[in-house]
Amino acid sequence: MKLRTVLLAGLLGLALSPAHAFDLNKALKVGTQALQAATLSDADVKSLADQACTQSDAEEKIAGPKDKYSKRLDNIAKKLGNEINGQPVNYKVYITPDVNAWAMANGCIRVYSGLMDLMTDDEIIGVLGHEMGHVALGHSRKAMQTAYTVSAAKSAVGEYGGTTGAALSGSTLGKFTEALINAQFSQSQELDADNFSFDLLTQKKLKREALASAFQKLADLGGGDHSMLDSHPASADRVKNIQTRIANNK
Ligand SMILES: [Zn+2]
Image 1 (spheres, protein in one colour):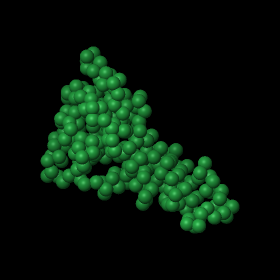
Image 2: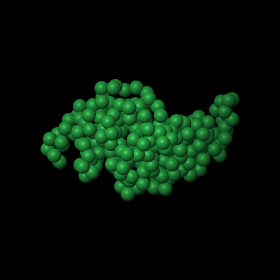
Image 3: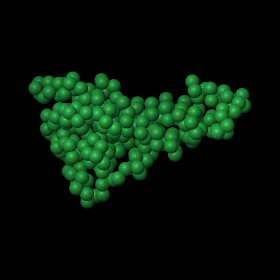
Image 4: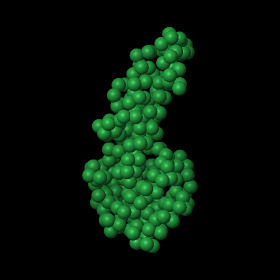
C-alpha cells in the first residue's frame, strides 16, 4: 500500500519530502523487485543466500581454521555430513557469546561459539539437524521470499535503493540478511524440522536424546537478542514429541 502511494506520488509529480528528492526510475525498479519476490527462481534463491551469507560473514568474527571451535565443528560436521538433500554445505563458527545457529538455502551453516559453549557435540548435531531440516523442507526458501519482499518494499519507502534482478545492496542487503537470520517459523514448521533432525540422527545412528536436551537447554536459558529461542520457539510439545518418538523407537 505504501509502495503504491509512493509510486502514485511520483507519477503525479508530487514532492514527497524536501529531504528525499524523488527518483521515479529507482522507485519503479524497486516496485519490479517487490513483484519478483513471489517468483524467485532456484538461481535467485541461491544468489540471494550467497549474498546474505557473505554479508553476515563480513559483520561477524569468524573462527580461523586452527581455532578450537573450528576443529570441534569440523568433527561435528564429519558425523553430520556435508550435504543437505545432495547440496554441499559450508560450516563456519562465529565468535560471539550469542546462543544461535542457522542454515541458509545455499547450504551456508553458521554456529555461534556461545551455543557451542552451552551444548555437547551431540546436542549441537541435533540443533544443526533441525536447521538443516528448515532448508531441506523448503521453510528457508519461504522465509527468504518474505524477507525479500519486505526488504524490497522497505527500500522503496526508505531510500529508493535496490537494483534490478535478485540482488540487494547496501542497507537493504543488511536488512534482508537480518530478516533471514531472524526468520520466524510456524509451530508446525518447527515440529517438522525437529522430526527431520530426529530421522537424520536415527539414520546416522547418533544420539537422539540430545535433540530433546538441546531444546531443553535453550528453553532454560530464556530468550534475548540473537537467541535461537526467538526464531525457533521451544515448547513443551516439541520436547514431548521427541521423547515420544524415542520411547516408540520410530
Ligand atoms: Zn526451527
